Length: 157
Image (tube, rainbow, N blue to C red; front, side, top):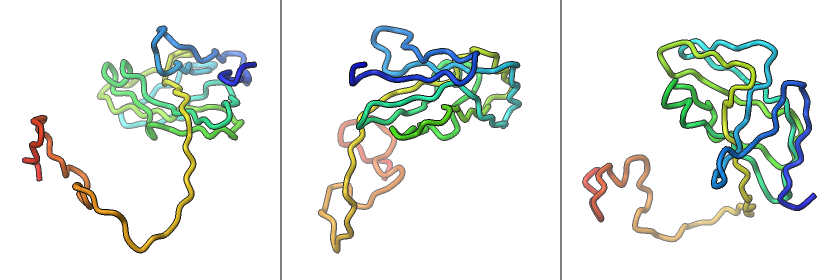
């Protein structure tokens, strides 16, 4: 197998291989491996099995991300987006879904519930220091740069 191979172990007979839906897709769709449908009531969460375990290439991670169509049409998204799968994890890939919509949502067997994006990992060595270098932003936090799109517009400060 090449170093870009994603080794996938089928854990349930209903499992589907993750797959890219277009030639330029960044993420592979993950499908629900279920015997029977799961109904997510508004505000309810569920851990949806995919029926697969994976072995990622060295130096990578996998991110479990929402599918935009589910989010826009039904209000269903991934609770811990993006969920991180470390390269040394060998358990079943599961998707933590939440229904933020107003109507119940039924996850049918085979429903594509999330995307899996494989990305490189940079590991760093943390170290305490006495001072940090100054930047233009400084300690500005949430909402610090405002909401308007004009160049240099900092009206939200």
